[in-house]
Structure formats: structure tokens, C-alpha cells
Length: 102
Image: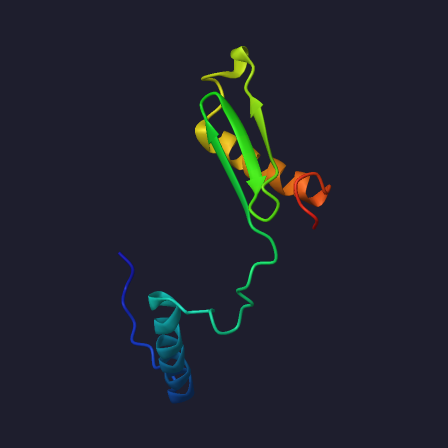
């Protein structure tokens, strides 16, 4: 084992550490950003996936899309990957102007 030594911490360092301890209590309990972030969406979309396909739509225009998975992909791709892909494709199609006027 390592021998123990007594260390003296200067009072300005102790004061700084106390400030940090107080400051770090706020992130530990969560900081609300509701008052500093613009919260009104400019566009709203929906997207979803299941084991057999993916799809999405624009709430504003009611235009949508869907894609049925090829038989050789059914059960191969995880639902998380399909959900992610559905959201990416929905945003991409909106950006292209195919389902919304973005």
C-alpha cells in the first residue's frame, strides 16, 4: 500500500470547489431549457415502422409514403433500424418537397 500524506488545500481552491459543487447540483437534477428555446414547430411529420415495412406523412398536407420490405429483408433488419430509416426518409422527402412545402 501507498503511504498516506497530509495535504493542505489553499482556501481559494476550497472556495472554488464549493462553487463547483453548488453549480453541479443543477445539472444533476435537470435544467429546463423551455424558456430559452423556440418551441413552436414549423413542420410536423409522423413516421412509423413494423416488421413488414416503413412509412411516413406530413400532418400539414396529409401526403404520405410507404414502402413494403422485400421478403428477404423481413425479420433481418431490427425494428429500431426501420424506425430510424422511416424518420430519415420522411425528413428527406419533405426536404425534397414531395410530402410538404418546406
